[in-house]
Length: 529
Image (cartoon, rainbow, N blue to C red; front, side, top):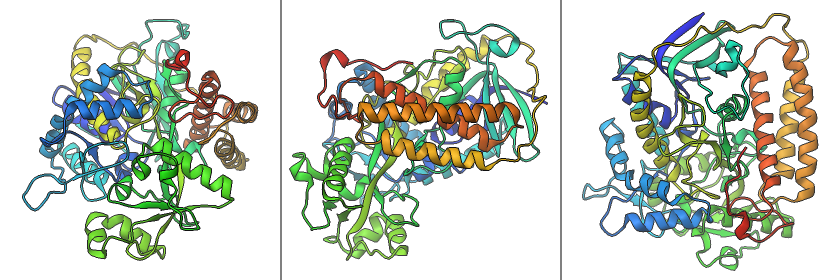
């Protein structure tokens, strides 16, 4: 079965939905999402969108804060463009129906997070992503030119390879014609063809044992782009959020950086406030510094967690500013007004990904990327808090403008064969998938986490190679399943992170390796694969 569209969107987060609403006025759009459309990383974004919307702030200061957090690897031109288009993006989201928290005088209430030298976080209480997703989805479902395909798993990008041509990573004229998509409802692979395809599949936090990401964040877009011979950049830079709720049933629930922005203090189990020992900005230092400080406390003291204390704020304040966090902590037995919150770092955000320009263009023609799956040069070696939603919306807008032009130049799409699964069968040993997935995530957590070493990376590479060989052998014999494809994608992402980390022989931003603890000027470069 084949579906034809002008624009294909893989993913249903802020980037994918914003883009779809813009290109939807110029042609037929398919949004393919592997679960329901409301399940994405955007939904769980608590903090907000960093944007300069008050006179006491400045674009220049936002640019400087971003570049400083990025540890020398940000592209200054890209930073300036994205930051300067932030206020327009806020207005655009409001026009789509997003309702942000306001002060008593009707102006936007602005929060502050680590690395920012001004209050510039536009938010909807502590559920900003949820509010953005709600408003965008309502508009998408009303749009006559947009169809949403839920429970459809994008498996492979379609390129010249699928029409019998030889494709290598050195070939400069690879085109994307769409994607093979597994319809989980009927166990059938559907061919989606389109003039322009947008990758908006989010990140890959699930490659680690502990993550703030939902289960859908398995690096599908990154892995698909890698298999299609796209260029990827800076995959070693994985951001660990410093403060996830430490509780066996909490599933790494994120405690927003905004809690520290409102005065929350980090304490070890002896009650000592330790962040001033590591950085003069204390709890408001960039995330990489805070996460490493917590990691150091845990390893040097042999403890399982630290404490985030905001008990100096009243119940009324906490319930109004952090309603979701307050309710969730209370459900696990912690009253933020009286109890310090036990927290640990958890994998949170991919600063690297499919390399794009500031319009979302990848190295493959007619393939764009936006949101966490892409690497524009904004984040460098460490993302500044709340710049992710900013980037997603700005790049979606710019990519939409480019896509409309690109689509107008595509006269026809070649005939593409149906997915061929001849010679495969439904496997009996499904335990291999679950076991290999668990082992991979443990290897990544133990050996490729917040602090790395040459030895740990070598061990991770060997174990990942074995998992890859076992899984590929299983894949070649088996019918299509989303679980199997997710495992293949996670292994591919793990390889990319490990290989990139081995290529960078210095410590910079989110990549800290004990064998090379200092930054080096001759390593001030992108890591390209």
